[in-house]
Every structure is written in structure tokens, then in C-alpha cells.
Amino acid sequence: MKNKDIKILLVDDEPDILEIVGYNLSKVGYKIITGENGIEAVEKAKKHKPHLIILDVMMPEMDGIEACERIREQPDLNNTIITFLTARGEDYSQVAGFDAGADDYIAKPIKPKVLVSKVKALLRRLKDVESDAGNIVKIGDLIIYKEEYKITNKGVEITLPRKEFELLSLLATKPGKVFKREEILDKVWGNEVVVGARTIDVHIRKLREKIGDKSFKTIKGVGYKFVD
Image (tube, rainbow, N blue to C red; front, side):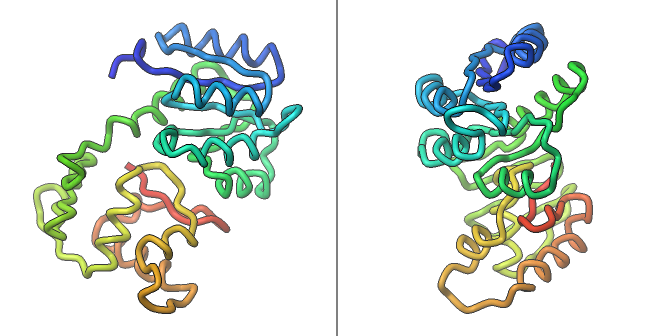
């Protein structure tokens, strides 16, 4: 996908931020749509179906956290990447953002070149995951064959127990997305059995041993994400 085909929704109540950030992103070819509050964020997200949404947290009428939650309620925006751009760097604010469904978090101030690089990295998630009718997922050297319950890493086949395989498949389907512990338990274990709080941690530890420690990142107090 070329830059000119990518739509980015930028929402902030500070005109200077909209101008500076918007200018630097449009300069590399992205189509920029702007909004000034959370209500506009939700409305324009529904209308334009952006590939990436950059949200401020503290905004009038509706803050970024609530806007993110409402956007995530839209099924056709489920794959849209959402990141917060805000001066609030406290841990609780980050956790609230991830709980609302955000994929990432960028702290102000940030240099324009660094921001552009960060945006490029976020947008890579749109094309890094290639699928064949939803059966095959390819991320770098890692290939997951969902129907066959088989994976290869750098050409070497690795056998995983069912739950480890399902956990890896879930995380790798959306590299960079933070999956909350509750979501992981629901999608991997469901109502099959009652599992302990440490079950996910144990399975992540085993996957790190088999796939590589750097492939999995722990987001303290929230959950895990796969790092491509």
C-alpha cells in the first residue's frame, strides 16, 4: 500500500499540534483528516474509515479514552490502528488507553522526524501480516499454519501444544496490538476450564523459549503483545 492510499485521522484540541503533526505526515504522502474533539473523532472515523487514528487524551466534549472505546465498538473499524499522542505519561493513563482498545501510546513532545518514523512503524502492521484465506500468517521468518496447527521459524518446524499454538496465533495475528489478559483468557481458554492467573505467564514463558524472548513484550498491568 502506497502512502497516498493511507488515511490518518489526527484528533487534538490544540491547533498547533494539528498543523505541525498534520503537515509532517502529509509531507510524506499520507492523507490527513483532522478533528478537534472526541465527538469529531468518532464521527470522522465512521465516515472516513482511516487506517490509523492518532488521538489526544485530554479533549473537550469527549476525551480520547471514551472516543477510543466508541470507535472500537464499530465492527468495521476493528482493524484500524489507534494510538494516543498526549503529554500525559503517567502509567495509569497508558493503562486506561490500552484498556479502551488503543494499540500504542506516543508521549508529547516528540520530534517530527521521530513521529513520522513511529507512524511508519505502526502502519507496517497493516502489511506485515499476510494471510491466505485466513489460514496462513506470515511475519518475517515466522509462518503459522492455523488449520494444520503447525509453525515454522526460519524454515525450521516447531511443534507447540494446542494452547501455546492458539496463544501465539492470537498475538501474531495483530503484531504490536496489546492484548489484555481478560481477552487472551476468553479467546484462548474460553469457558473450557477455570485457569489460574499465572496460566498466561507460563505459556508466554514457554513461547519465549521456543520462538524467541524478543518476540513477546509484557505490558505491565495490561497484557502482552507480539513484537515483529
